[in-house]
Amino acid sequence: MLEESKISILIVTHNSYPDIKITIDSIVANIINVDYEIILVDNNSNEKDILDFLEDQSKISNIRVVPLNVNLGFGRANNLAFSLASYENILILNPDIIFDANSEQNILKLIKFVEQDDRIGAVSPVLLKPNGKIDKNYHYEIKLFHTLVKRFKKILFKDKSNEEYLPSNTLTKVSSLAGAFILIKSRNYELIKGFDESYFMYSEDIDFSLKLRSYGLDLYLFSDLFFNHNVGSSSRKKQYRMIYEMYKSTAQLFFKWKISKFFKKTLLFIIATPFVIIELLIRSIKRNKNVSD
Image (cartoon, rainbow, N blue to C red):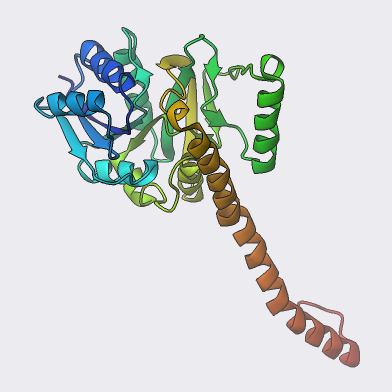
């Protein structure tokens, strides 16, 4: 085993069988020379297949299963998994990511990269959908209204607007990464206090990214490293709930990062304006236009 490449893999599940079995099996089959542990937090699954699978996994030495009797949501459950992690390298992973023969080398490249500079906050590879197309797991710039418009375009004109393109550079600095696959140092996870637990599902990864950037840390995408993502497989089971959570979390994100800034600026304007008026009046009376006095 490579001592410097130990990694804790955090996975949150909820009735995600058989995807979680495929994911775990693919990790076991393809990660050979990296010392890893899997911390599997189950958000109150109630289907027999996954409960039986989790019971079997709990008997494996490097897999820790944490069954919950309530659904904590994605971010809160990941924070719980992180609190149990042993290693400095943390991989936040969806229960529907599939590893292959290239995955071990890809993981090693990601780990080596985040070690290079303390300003690196987190990194991700490219995720591919089952049809081979890109599952865009990053944003160059976070524009919430534009994101909503684009979503409706995808629904209305799927064949015309659903194609995503890779950045031309092998390594690209981005504004946000998706929670389906984020490699991060434990110290950076601790620095931002993990995921904001007020989100239940969706947008918590954008919030996570914004918090990293607020500490001056950079986020990167490797456009030549690929992992397969069976995207949306679990959310199809509760479609209406997932759509509701998506729009609710988007509004929550907007109020936290946009509206709050507007209110702060407005408050500062209200506080400063009377002093500006008073000084201008005094200067007018004294006929003093030198602001530096």
